[in-house]
Length: 141
Image 1 (cartoon, rainbow, N blue to C red):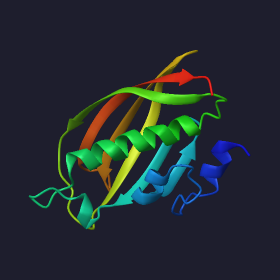
Image 2 (cartoon, one colour):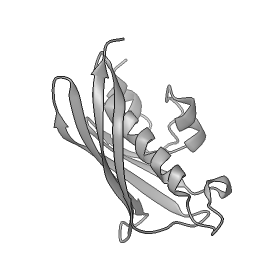
Image 3 (spheres, rainbow, N blue to C red):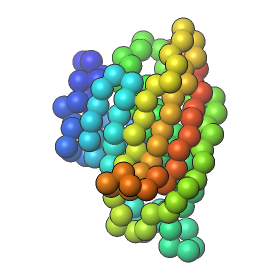
Image 4 (cartoon, one colour):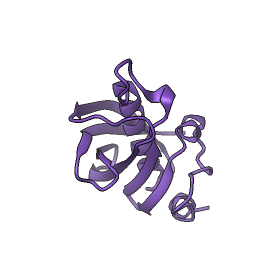
């Protein structure tokens, strides 16, 4: 089945069709899904907090990497596309039970490399929590 259609049929729902056990643990709700552009909503859970009671930077980075991976899934490539690096700037915080939105887009899609961007926002997109870019590489299965 078309991988993008799998994402699109999950709009408004938790993305239980993911092949990633880690994404299933993060438990995002698909807000929108287009080729190379996704929006997922997450609910900040207690185990995602740092000692100050804010969303842990490592969890933010994990969300960032995972949703960009799902964006690669939306491209319907035959090959796997793996992360080379992530560069993330942290701007604000989120608290337990807050809803946050991760939005991705492809900046450049070449024959072997992809550069993608992710922004993580509060629910109404009035406050950016983190923003960054990722370089990815297509590998043969």
